[in-house]
Length: 210
Length: 210
Image (cartoon, rainbow over the protein chains, first blue to last red):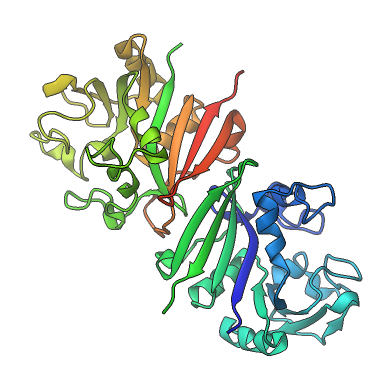
């Protein structure tokens, strides 16, 4: 049975997955790159990167994934849907290489990019979006790509099988929180924590057998 | 130079150091004992407890401490100051064994208990309270005993030299948050994280040399 997975989702000590305000110049607001430096230091990201526990987790992002679901706020800065030429942050060859479903109230025709990524724009509940993405993924898994609002919605709906969070030892103070409304969500999962010499802590949530 | 230290201060993944509502029957509200089970499983707490990393951190609570500062919400349940006979949660021989300063807007005479604990009731700013506690502690350190509001106030005032937090992999959803108003507080500290086989993660904050 294919799984629904979350990978490399980074949060601050106070639970923010992005800072504010988000803009074309600062996709993560005042957080800048601080939530993702741990990943950019790995070989997964850069050929001369580290190969320890951070890399071991980071590289699980891609294999076995047949589709991604992302939120509108991941696809572009506020207001992107008013720009008919906006094609995402990632240039002509985005790093998804699968059908990629963008949850938005402003649907538009699919956008076929180089390298196997096609963006589909969808107004749907988490369960509906997952059914659509599963069909596109075939026998492979579906990744929930974020941002925090989308991750939270899928967790609240009980649709996540595996979640890898990375807790970065910074206090952002403001932004978008992951945990709001998720009281006791851990009870559905086996949770494991492992700290890295880079100072981040990897948290893995594996759904308990029913 | 004596230090100001915080030990064994447990928080949930979403940053709550206590649940709600707090009462005489449930000092930590709906959190129950879940934030402190890691500690109750150690030899520091129970003679037959574990002796690994959780115990190594836990037992640093006491040595070298000459005074404690705590908030009114640690000393008793809501309304304790209306009860002239309330002497704290801990019975005739409280586990502090030093002068212990309770920050409250309802001052009362000092309360001398067995075993070396004397409760002093104080209306003061963090800096004033620390000066008073330092004097009482002599050449030993002062511990900030919590709850979250007091820890937050001392962090915000830049008065903490060493902080040991324990992150417990539960999502409480509500209660009193540690991190509010502390944006970028980590920049004054070297931060280290180590996960335990018990599933908690120990975070140590050591103030950087000036």
